[in-house]
Image (tube, rainbow, N blue to C red; front, side):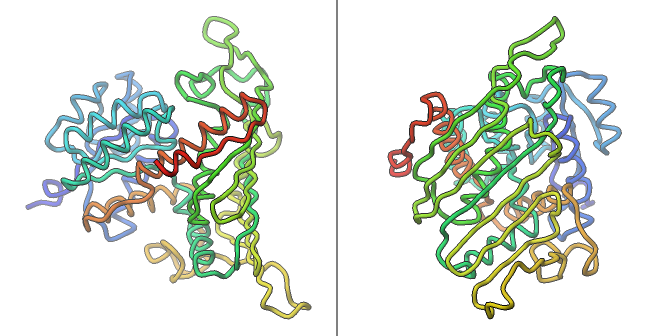
Length: 384
């Protein structure tokens, strides 16, 4: 049997920013890691001309404007959803119902009710071997995967504080045009969900602890943007500030903004414990800063670890020591993990159930902001 006939056929739904990133990952995963073989069968978009151009550029066999027909094809085994959040639930539920493995870009959905329905469907599909995973690619940054291992091993002692800031500046210009990311009906929320979902997931990923309560505030600095037919109202937030309490007693501060002048993609994470601390900055993603109190007082301070050694997470498929990786490589790691879960019959992470928990936190943040900094408890949701 040829490689093509035995390979897993992939369809990506959506072909702009995330569709391009995922396409590159599917194209390169087999060349980087020992995983089940995949073939890029179909790229799906709304406009026939533009999706066909993208398909040819990104290495797809075919293009289509009909995601339902694509999913129903016998040669499609994996459905990768890279559309705006408003369509995640409809596409994912259809794919799962027809026995397709499903990968969904974050956040899982625009509402808790949609996320809950998706999580339930994924759990049911898992009983017959159908896998699903949520695309939080920053879990696949080797430095952050290493940070999680160090924390789990107790190197920082008892966790006390986390400080996470995710700042971008692509909306600073008030004349920047309207887009789907600025419409609540399409995106669900603004910086809160777009960037805050990554931050909330990292709190849970790094600490292994659930979030028990939140307090948040949001702001929309520019309330109208140029649209196709004139000025259009912005219906989501531009920035968000919050504090989160964790079940282990730690407290996290989370800030997100798409109007932080000069910050292009600044995802900064600091974790402080009783015996050490660590820091990470996405704009220097191959480095992890580590400080431990078990060293003599005169030698204490942050050590910069270049995370490119063969024993570091994900580095076994890459280059010799010191040859740094990039943001796009995290998506290759994501596809690797998903393919290995399909092959081995294990449950991939983050699961839709984990995505549901993130969505509950985001919704609590939104409610807190609407109530002017009221602290929202998540204890009831956690026990249900």
